[in-house]
View: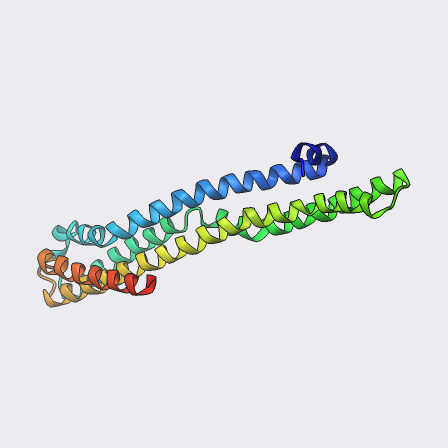
Length: 216
């Protein structure tokens, strides 16, 4: 089928739906690639960032008792984890919206194209199979375009969601380790960085083995 011939046959509504799907496709690919890269980078640095955030409170923690020290550390960790969750969700709404509405846009384009084709056939007065099959078949292209736009968005969304879950797992696991070390210090100082880094490396090894087993 010649695309130029199909394009000349379409009306303004079909052209508008085509460009809408094209815009959604470009936006989902751009957002998906950026989102995967940022989520991957965030997963690699989340543990070290949490340690730095807690160690930056060392001056304030020195003058607090054990309960206050634990409270301040917990609030700092919760604030940081909330920021990671917000960063991880940036762009996800574009992917989710594209995956949800693109098939319906394509379906509407198909319905409108069939209506337009049948209307043209009715005006011409020729209703043979050869006159009907061509325009109706060309109208079905919009359904295929809608699915072609939605599928990459779904894939990007699910992969990014998986990355974000692993990032939050590492963040929460590291946070529990930091709180445990803070409790052991009796509120006198911040958690020992070497011990915490060792615990973080252990957590990273566990996460890596879990990822390998999942991929296998």
